[in-house]
Image (cartoon, rainbow, N blue to C red; front, side, top):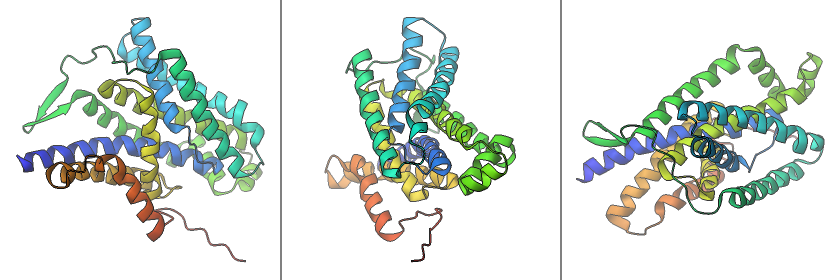
Length: 297
């Protein structure tokens, strides 16, 4: 029984880890483009999930179309947030911009509570089968969908940054904003696009988690849980975000196994990522794949 439970938790960890990796890429995308850590990332998940839930319940739109509309809405929403709230702060100290993202996090969470209430709301039935038996293990159908979507997003990111014109422009901007401007790249458009893509991809993760656990303000906590994975992989590394997400997903579920079978502490699953964050910052503050800045004084 213990070996079966361990195997189940490892599979769950890999599945959750892919979601962590996807959300982690959103952190990295904004940071690489604008050197800003977006502490409202979890609220992007929350808004995307509530939008999809509202379309399905209030308008009876099929899940596929409701999902696409929610993702497109969040793309526009992210661009508008960057243009209206963050663009006027270009040139201001980074700490000021970070404080604004924290303020947005509080504002959006309060707004969602006012609009939809504080209680968790389940998604309407989406799949004909809630769980699928794989090698004797029960896996949520929503998690299987999330794994496929997450892998597609990762492949899309890889193609986007390597071959697309906009992706190359974003890489150039991340390397040097001055050089990018000298090449005719609109840095403002790159900033807006990075926030739009980040919000849209976050909506995907928000909908998946909402299908499994219901939609509530607790969903925004997912963004904070991803942050240790981003630091582990390296704050400016897309590949590192994926690796860090997988490691954190496995670490959480292994901690749950050890806690449930041996330690009996009861909350190790929730706090182990932050223990890992402290250790990472002490040993390797730039992460596994992050770029180390060398400053000469």
